[in-house]
Image (cartoon, rainbow, N blue to C red; front, side, top):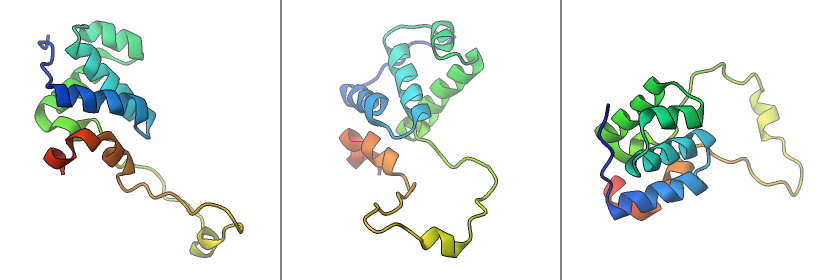
Length: 119
């Protein structure tokens, strides 16, 4: 069993911001689990609440201890590349918004309070 996390006020503020405003639900869930463990919930309670295995929650906490805020962020995931040809990717309707980039925007929004120490 892991001892409850001892987080600084800045880390709590950053994780709280991540738990509300991170772009990806998995990122928000990991931040909520870290905050819950900091507040005294057990790994079994967190695993039950998030409907994941004990080992998954343990992995989130171990990753936090090893890597800090970077452990919360959503990384690249394997999968089949899109079959859309390059010409079709460039077609957009007039007045539509440009495609959003997935180049770490969620991390930047999540890490705003600790930006100077993380980047």
